[in-house]
Length: 129
Image (cartoon, rainbow, N blue to C red; front, side, top):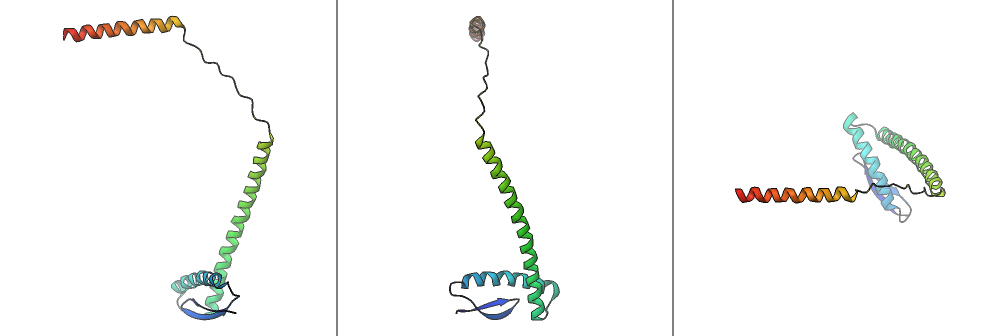
């Protein structure tokens, strides 16, 4: 069984773990060390047992909060899955027909004639200038 040396709150500990779990132990120790360091910054030096207890309680509090958030997120995901399943089981909506009015040919011709007159006037003005 491998022995891993970890440091928590400036103190070293040798801990045994299962083969292959060394990295997990190091990560867990880093979390505990972070909490212990935070405690030491706030409260100063304290007995080892108290420091470990307080750091463990802080991590447990964070874990409870994360469990609550996870549970809420899982409930929301399940509700969204049900809604999606319900929407997928419904028939597709029928397309809505929209009619767009067509500009009458007489209006188009009148606009073309006005444009031609405007261009002719512009040419006259350019020629006089």
